[in-house]
Image 1 (tube, chains in turn yellow, purple):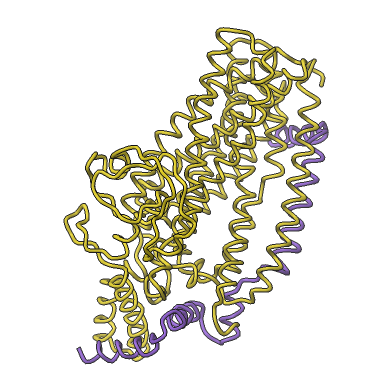
Image 2 (image 1 turned 60 degrees about the vertical axis):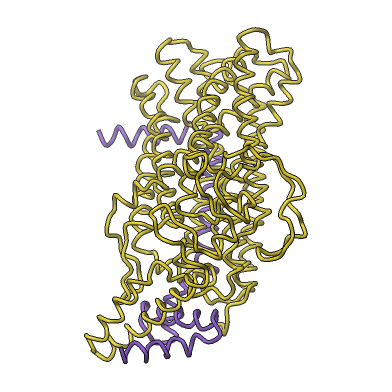
Length: 519
Length: 90
């Protein structure tokens, strides 16, 4: 047991979790996207009976299998970390996380394990309809798994449907539906899954263009690109729409994240959205007098519209959120950071006093302190905040990550639309520039997804659970060196796995689609 | 029926080519994760440390949360007890 919690322990624990999650997210979105695309291709085969579609679907299934095998269980490492590096957090949320993660585990195991086997082993052995259903159910299983994981994540961003039990020191679920269908969870699910679909479409279009560049399997490539472009356009448009809903949700529940994403220090009404901007590197703290931007171009009133659905709506900036005093949408006055910190300390003091009263078997005292705890519980986490500057997330990281995600998202919409138009009007087999662009967009698809998660997770710092538990209280009191050691072990293992995955994937792509039924 | 399903899987696994490599990777990965990492590098911190302190798990977590607040706020020890006293008087 260590004597104190150092910044370095917090940083290494965060770095390890971030690294593992980012590796995990290399595999998941492609699984989600490819599952849908191969489902569409097999459906066309089922409806037309055209064997070429069957071979096309089977090729993408092979790549789906490679990605699935390399990626499967990488998420389990995150669960190991909960118990070791984040044990306080894990205990605190145990009852809330238990249900979604258990459902996810059972679904992932039974649905995916059953139907993925039929999908791979069942060609020619089960009916075409049953095989098609298995392919779709494999994708549906993966998507439902994602739902439960994202429900758990959404709960951390906007905790609902629970009560804190000071006797067990755990949050207990009081409303399963509120947890499973919160607005944050719904929006997060659609936005995240759509980003996976977009990546799948970019991957298929990019690999298809590889075949066009190599001047082989041209018909197969064109079929794949056509499906990918249509599917990708729909997915990227939905991703954009759900991104807007996500912004609205963040404005309601995590206004500091929105302010950091926009580099907005001084809020107001009719606030513009920064389309392009360069942050001032000399701006070190929210309370210094430096201008936050060296240069920026605003879209007038757009941030107000996104955050409040009104052109002249009020959007608080970082300084407003720290100072408080502005009117909230429900008509009450926003507390300052100092007031929240004070309420947080009162919550912790009440918790201590309550537990002592229970030990002393003083029920009257226990009831008094329990009431005080319940009154201040929404600010519990603020009792761990030493300096109000800690409440401000990393502004440059959020500002630039958000813009990378949005700009790439816009680029993808344009790209899919362009491909569809070009395919309709001319022959793309000779457009080498398009083939190279398509290949280049595959890594950009991954970058966009990772940038989205960077915004989602670093934008809510210092919280592991919004307003309830900061990282400094959530981590285990273990040696920094052991977290550092496991960080590098994971880095090595994941890198080897990724290299193996990419090598096998490239080999399978080079082999190309089957030329006959025997292959 | 069960025999048919069993045979379906047996045939499927037998006919695998790329799948064999992928299963080998999954097997190695799971072995490394559960037999090495989980066993030697990822202990259940709360179980271990609460046992060391000779307290229950919830007691241990409560102590952790109260001690952390002391670490976070210079005067929290006083604040905690001060508030406790104050609340008692109330």
